[in-house]
Length: 497
Image (cartoon, rainbow, N blue to C red):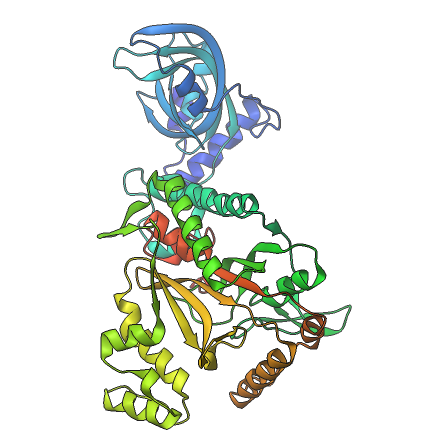
């Protein structure tokens, strides 16, 4: 490993690395050793020696490891990073044996090395290890992206997430925060007395939400199956069983639909059901959960998303959907007595309405078009139309509306909750009607979930239920512009030839 050997290497960066790998195999043998034990992470090192004065040695010998991110003065100074941070490595003839220094020309940016040496702080205040021993742990065959610009192409960032995280501290922090948020949801629910369960991801009958499923086939059972679009119908069976009165699941769902900045075919939800509670109890739970997560990530219930200041301090605004539509458009749906009157009023206001839409469908459409874009601060929109809410209980005195709310923030729907329907005859009637509508739309594979209906016949206690879109919530809390920025490996188009 002398200068002559180095100058004989190819000019192609990848080929240079392969040639160096060959030389390393000849000289040191195992370039990818299985056994190497560091004594502390870089963050632990920084914390332990935080008080070490400039131009001072600690007298301690430590072993660290990490990926080489920068190299200066022919490797005399290197910065190596592990998942927790960076540390500077100093290799000099006065402190580093010749055998270790001989490895320096073979080290490229991106290589993973182990270093044993003495801890000191330089005159400039940089915590540093004077290398006594350097071990090659992983020789990389591809160069790292350029340090200062990272991975500029957005599609490559999503396709090669390892490079994105390797070169983008914002992306790395966002996924660390994602882990904290998911963990925080789990701890909050458990501390609130909810029991976590796991329900099937493969369903023989899909349901619990209106969405196009992904289809697969079970060879042994000779059965067409569907990836879960929602866990609702299984979670409710746990309430029937008496296993627990408060149940939740953090689950992966799959919907064979569009991709956008807020939609991914595979996504994460937290869904829960609380016996002997109603949708107002669930509103309180959402507010407590959101506030706790904001404090966990930002240290406050107030935080920025883009150019907006968001506050998760409760109580959130609560407004019935008909009132919200009337406030924004002037259209009073509660004064209307028929579907025809609702369609006529909507058309008169300039909305394109389908000829067979019901009163509730017209109300929901105008809400989506005109009210959703105004919901910046967190708000609970309540009293949804029964027409579009087959699993919720009616509002007393207003049978066209149900005890349902959706939580909105930054114009996005973040959560959906009901006072759950538990009348078995009413539930069957609504599901049959929903099935007929699906078949009319051409969804011939849609079936009635008789096993769920059989469970409801056994008796489910009154309950409040909730589903939260975890990915969107993480987007909001981490200031991410797209859902693909918070999903580690998002769905992508086929790679171009």
